[in-house]
Image (cartoon, rainbow, N blue to C red):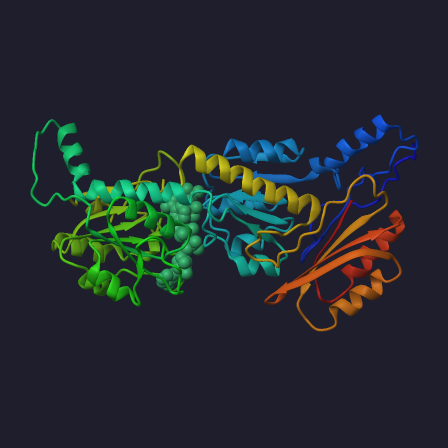
Amino acid sequence: MTNPKPISQPSLARPAVSTSLSVSPTATFHSPPASSSFMASLAQRAAAKQLKPFNTEDIKILLLENVNQTGRDILSGQGYQVEFHKASLPEDQLIEKIRDVHVIGIRSKTKLTAKVLQEAKNLLVIGCFCIGTNQVDLEYAAKQGIAVFNSPFANSRSVAELVIAEIIALARQLGDRSNELHRGTWNKVSAKCWEVRGKTLGIVGYGHIGSQLSVLADAMGMNVIYYDVVSLMAIGTARQVPTLEALLGEADFVTLHVPETPETKNMLGAKQFEQMKNGSYLINASRGTVVDIPALIKAMRAGKVAGAALDVYPNEPAGNGDYFTTDLNPWAEELRGLNNIILTPHIGGSTEEAQRAIGIEVADALVRYINQGVTLGSVNLPEINMRQLTLDEPNHARIIYIHRNVPGVLRRVNEILGDHNVDKQISDSKGDIAYLMADVSDVRPEDIKEIRDSLDGLSSRILTRVLY
Ligand SMILES: NC(=O)C1=CN([C@@H]2O[C@H](COP(=O)(O)OP(=O)(O)OC[C@H]3O[C@@H](n4cnc5c(N)ncnc54)[C@H](O)[C@@H]3O)[C@@H](O)[C@H]2O)C=CC1
Ligand SMILES: O=C(O)C(=O)COP(=O)(O)O
């Protein structure tokens, strides 16, 4: 068997601006066995599935916010060092921790702002184990060559089911009746309690969640209307309306399923509550910033809004057991004092099914990115996919070059790669950032070093990685 040749590459750390994630000191080229019996070939193929581009145990991962066991198992199974926390961390502790890691996994609570990310000198990739990515400064991350992945729909059915439960619970004032009886009071009433059959549900944002909700509400005999910034195919008997105002004037139940953006901030404020039907209901399981809560409190006190269900808040506590105080949200006490309001602690996507699926989906994306540089599904980098190299292909290297999208880069890169046998090369850009992946064969360790040093020397470089 050919002796594996060590490649001298000092560390995984990113220098001040960006880094070469490359092969660690003890990493080796993978060479095939000299004798190749059928059994050896099978073993080789099996091993090929686990081809590791570098010492995976050098990769440090920080997982916050109780990322599901499925995801933790996949990451630990790769040999990465995984540090797990149940809650999110205060900003100062987050900055301290993020300095050291190559990967961070979060959910909706942890804010990865430019201030935090500029301290993350070694960070290669962020996994959002949820749908929303509003908590991450995606543009800043891309400019630092940090890829971001999420799970675009795995918890959407769970949110839709929660909203269905809330529609009926609000229409029947279930929360209030249950609370009364918990306190010992029998209060059997039918006044202002309704069936949902024949009522109109107004869905704001007809994406993954909104459209599934549409199907479920349709099946319960509700009329479904929706408003979205883009024109979307109606499902079942649903109907798109042209403006938010038109939706608010017609819906008995209004439910919000838009992302957090500057346009959706306080999308439901005093003016919009005025436009709603008297005695209608509001449900918000999108983001806390979408509803102006003091305006909602006013509308509920005035009887304009007969009930509300809130799952999300502008400022959410860091972890379970933390108190939902007026320090966090000044109107917290007033909200708690209202009738027919369901308050849940951001549990829309919190089911066993959703969390298990998200754990697998995002952890798999992280492994693909760390080990192979594949950006399929990334929300902030161009999506590049190339087949995984195997042990049948010794002395190959995969070059990843993340760079500013400026004229002349490809020519310069190809001047560097031109002396070698480039088997395949793909490049794509997204805004100011471009991502190039090239598989090069018949390369010796000294070639790798030369290629990496030359790419690192280009002024367009954000990050160079050499895998395998
Ligand atoms: N409560 C919870 O636990 C959960 C909350 N969410 C939140 O729900 C949001 C929606 O999720 P998905 O349906 O999966 O997203 P999606 O991206 O599939 O759909 C969002 C829809 O909103 C529309 N939209 C965007 N801006 C709009 C605007 N200004 N006015 C009207 N429509 C607009 C888009 O065109 C799109 O059709 C997520 O961004 C996330 O913030 C998601 C999962 C769980
Ligand atoms: O998926 C999302 O965007 C959610 O809001 C769910 O967030 P969570 O994973 O429960 O922090």
